[in-house]
Image (cartoon, rainbow, N blue to C red; front, side, top):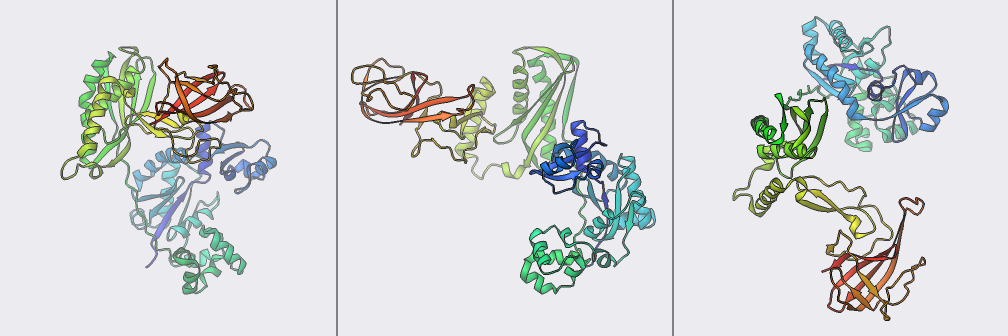
Length: 513
């Protein structure tokens, strides 16, 4: 396949530019963007001080004591690059985003429109300069790879370079083979003495395919100037936000909810027209005193107009009951998560029990409030109560502790069925009727012989017991240190309990059903 002529526009040091704007740092300062402990990008001032990509943070700071270290933030890079893209697309619509700071343009259309390849490259530079990126560089060659290398080979005095038709192989030949982006291939070729793209392209393609597989074969074609990748222009995202303004401002929740119903219907109808549904919604409420309250809501299925109105009402009542601190001037609805409508269609015979459960729980939640219906997921921790993570119906629980990590001290075997979240008091007695205590060495003061369950005054006989097992958490932090001893007991009525002794008090953590 004949390579397609491509234009690549490159904005140098874009992660530095976006990171500095996000953090409010002077762009002329010594800045390094770090990812996984390694410098991923550095500013011109940092490079002048000896900082280079690939350095560890400590070595980079040793070379430049005034270095400002910023974490890599791909979301911020894309967000700050979006206005540049919009300005570029206003003049040239066939734009593909390779990554924030690098775009690929099919050269055929701009070349015909502007009257030549040099004129098209100058037009791209002009559009980028108007968008606030006067230092942008442009390369034009056969295929996106050669075009990007052409853009990177430019200088500040000559910010565009055009590789003649059919000349990409000769242009790429002296460049290092590491530009293929395949570390394993680069290491093997270096051991074989193959260090340039030209030497790599001279190898027999069948041998490269047998040794390195399809990825190696594709890299071989790119090195030979036969980059067959086509430019796929991006589809500009639609603005699906919905906004309603209140004039005069409203200060009652019921008035706002009533006025919002039609806006919610139009908001979801626009998504339905695109065969999509909303599963994550951001509600932004602007008040008369200039305050902005923003929250993202999730849904276990997809939002209906009534669900949208309920979320706005819950967000308003979370600020004040009926009287708000300031009147509301506007409400904005933004779809955070959008899914294809086909994934949410009912089955041939209806939704079944799951659908009825969902409607019932959503109805109860609508009447009693967002946090009136909770669902449980398993989190990390040593105590059973710590592993229970509750979240409102429809929200995704985010455990603060990873359940997949090892937790030394966690009870092995089967977990109790009923976890008692309010830590009810119990009594554990020895044969003399005295409360069993556990000393600092984990030794009980006597064998457990009696047990008074929570909410009862009757004493039950302990027929079996095991433990106690100590749990000492964060002993190095006096404010957060915790020392608990756990005990398993089986009472005379056949019930089994998991008990905890903490600060001289016995309480029930869970019950085995």
